[in-house]
Length: 469
Image (cartoon, rainbow, N blue to C red; front, side, top):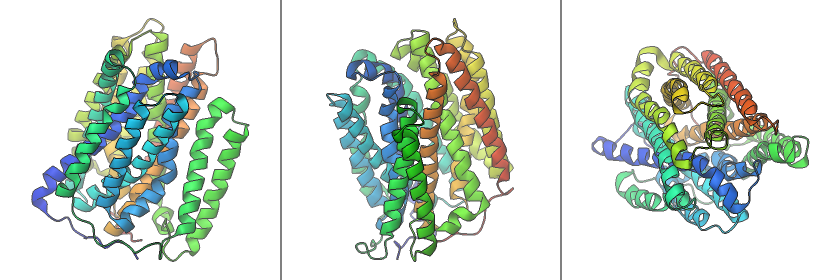
């Protein structure tokens, strides 16, 4: 039994304010993502993180988020998108407050993990509300463009605001700033979002074994990826967690194949389109996180930029990304279709990362980075919208939660994998940090290009028949 949902968008008159709330929520999540990157050097110094262990400020969030996204997606379908949305926001706000008040590294890491749990509920709920509220085609493309633009605005604001807050008030304020934003969104949700139907009662019919296996397997995979650079890839924390997590996910496939009401309907992932989309999402987010790490490390430890100067350097990239997501991506999707737009976006983003890497000499700076920033920002904005248009294409309303959870899981696991790999490449030599950053940047560009080629495996005009749970 699943939550009853409407098959067609309703309450058209409120679609504008509703989309504004959903876009604002994406802005909050993106703001937190980038604001933390800019503050990492100060956080590491204040709380005693090493050069390798400071990645846990990012990775702890990825573990909480990546480990529970599948469960969060199913919660959307069974409990209701609005309920899940509000619960995720509440957890996000409380954890942000705890992070700003953290007296040591352990408390901060725990707060970031709880923030990830909130994100695991919030992210699929937001996407499902977009997929259910806007018909597939031009209306949804425009909605996803606005959603993607808000994410880019959050990245831009995070870069700049992170520098301002860290310089003026201290790193704690990169967490405190989320609290009033989350509270405001929670208060607006009951007035703007459609009410949920009656949820499934209790645990009856709920795939408890699948939920446990998906959560434990995903968490161990992300934990292993995050632990590898610090503990060593041959260690119990690194390879051991990865092997255990993959084994549990393999067992999950067997359980789901026999379940009556599975957590993950396997027919949703057996088809070429969804499977390809998940792979490309993972590649995109992995190289995005890796390239952000490379650029942040180049600007601050290598060039000696302050947090504010680093934030200002990110600004052109994210402003161009905003414009591309809002204006260019919907037009390209309407004219070229998902496959061509996504492949072009990924290949263009690869060229931008390559230009950015070439613009990182020992004596470089803002202007040497500008060409790569503009190219990467434009095509990255196009690719981001196209990826999530592909993730929701042809999926019936009652399966949108789990589809959103799968797409978001691919995004977060890919991000954790990319960060772990590119941190390892960049720090392989303790005596040549700049050389390591160049190696990581070229690797990120190559991986992004491969993702663009993989996107060509999608159906030419992907608007397939509905897929139900």
